[in-house]
Image (cartoon, rainbow, N blue to C red; front, side, top):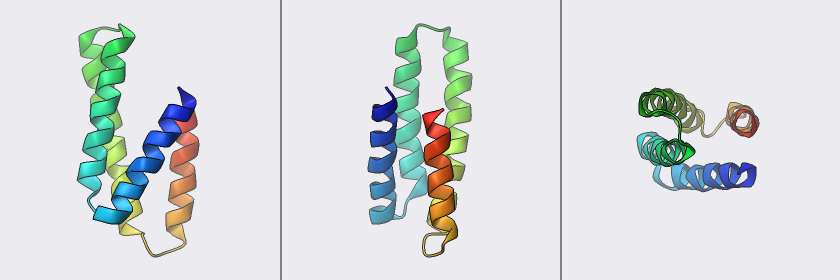
Length: 87
């Protein structure tokens, strides 16, 4: 599961670099999180709340990456986001 998360983030980062559309990347990530949460067997309301929080954080993450695209802060945000996704 850990490698799956990293591969998804790397693919979405590549998509963000090519399209410069953080909302698209966050939407795809949120959809994947929702599918995984629904398959986990936890309650539906819990799945929705967890997915909404993950979606908001993903939007913030991809927006920050897009905003600081040509600076050194990009790499700091990228590494912090990858480390957080591993937890």
